[in-house]
Amino acid sequence: MSRERERFEEIGKRIKRESDASSQMGRRHMLGPPGTLNTITPCAACKLLRRRCAQECPFSPYFSPHEPQKFASVHKVFGASNVSKMLMEVPESQRADAANSLVYEANVRLRDPVYGCMGAISALQQQVQALQAELNSVRAEILRYKYSETNIIPSSHLALFSSGAVSIAAHAPPALPAIAAATTSSSSSFRVFIICFVHATIHCH
Image 1 (cartoon, rainbow, N blue to C red):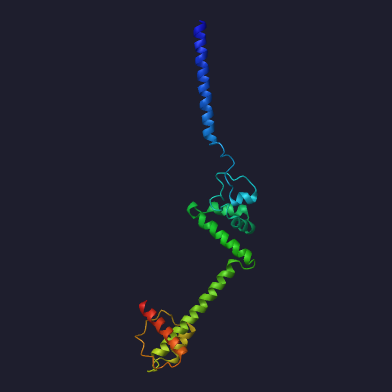
Image 2 (image 1 turned 180 degrees about the vertical axis):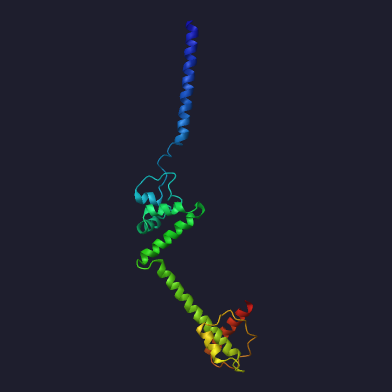
């Protein structure tokens, strides 16, 4: 009886040792290898807000810890909670673009607190209008050179081109006549060259 009891006790000890070893291995697998705890760098948002960066942090994929100024600008203009709500309302495939847009708008707002993005849009619209007027002027100049010998184009037509009332997508006129003899100075030759280049470009299109 004593031998059987000793054998059962030995088997029980062996089973206990194996179960302890397996539980320790499972615990190590869940915690990860030694030295990996608390080594994840928090994102720029969590670092600024001084909180723990969880695995499901909504800011982590879009605000790198290496560019903290991006989230600082967004947080200053919109607030962290509003940024989180806006990102969650956007499909996941578009959140990166949304975050970049928020960063751009925040930076513009910080540079121009009064107008923000509207100031940049207004400046671009003014540039478009100036270029449109310049293009209309060049087209009118092309028509003047084209019909300078025949004088068949009325002045009212040129006025419409100059004012932009006539679409610049009009049919391209036929080939320009020879204009080398009409230019004597270098500045006028350069201007004629520019007009010819624009005219050739219009024909290509």
